Length: 480
Image (cartoon, rainbow, N blue to C red; front, side, top):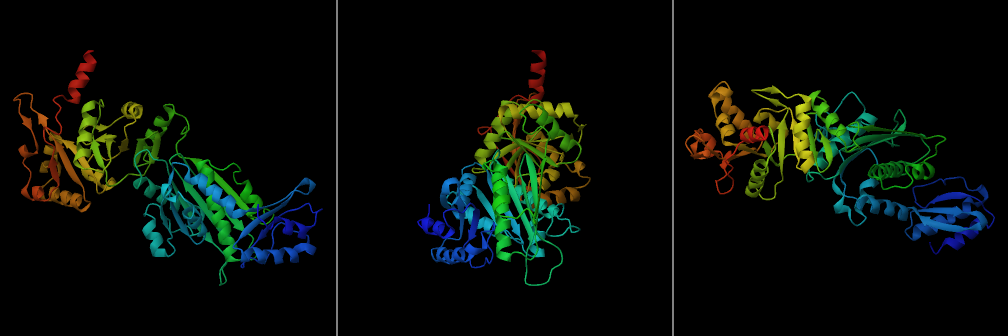
């Protein structure tokens, strides 16, 4: 409670039964929640005194029996941010046109480094094009619109996934506004906020009464809405949007809309329904990648600069896990995951039940796996640039056979593309059951130019060796 509580309450009179908010900010010229006009001059005078003490916003309440209190809105906001920072969620924030205070509030409270990965302000057209990939950037919608807010949030979400470890809860936040300006602008003053995560995305549309607030006031409202949306999505608010609608806007003249959309039906259910729904997304082409890791499902958010072990995993066995571990030891500091393409260049497309069966092997053990529609390694590189792919001896042999490309020139062009994407290969050896020889990368006829390019490196037998194949394991399991 502020030390000025008594004097301010005295200014209002003991019999006042009002709830009001005094905005102590030089840019504010109006008072909210209609104090009696006979008392406004006294409040304004006290407001200047609060400004001199550095207090920006206070909430004045009069309860039954004359109970009196002043609560700093900054204190409440700090509490919200502290709860946000107490979660495990990482977030990326893209803001344009308004809501600029959001990042300041998030970063000014201790613990921000646990939560905030990046903040960007793509204010100009060129920077918006850089932030939004072509498939998300719809030039037919206005920059201040619900679709643009969702696109910004989804782009931020993808960045958050890429900068986080497998299984980490992440969130992308997009804010785009058309606020009061110093020139004539047709249309409403408007604020759009979207929050995008692995489970769902939501959007908020707020149309403000035009001309009744300054730009600074509108920017604060946009920032408050963004902060409340983040807290609500993280589940760390006990009031939902009630505080915002009560304290920040006038619902008689301002219009707030909200929608939430589940990305995968049954996402809150730990049953097999989640796997089924997610697999359908990739089979129907709604998603290019589906990642299962840490109990989360990430749609269309492939992570670059990782180690990927592609395979059919029929079945998943210890050899796969040991091979990925050996590759991670070869590339310290880089995470590894498994990649399962739903289609094979030679065998065609897997059916849904078979895909689900193989995915559930990973879900049961907690190992990260990414479903793709990328049977060719060059297609995998498009999804996962700057990554290392772990392949077996037989796969490496096929990679350098020009008959799979049509000509040597075509093959070289594909490898040039891989080099441009900063991808490379780690090759594991294999035992020849007929001769007993352990074949390694040195036994493969690789064009000299590719050897010089450091695209291939070998795991020695000491680093990894498994003298049994998935086929042999399947035969043993079938026999048993």
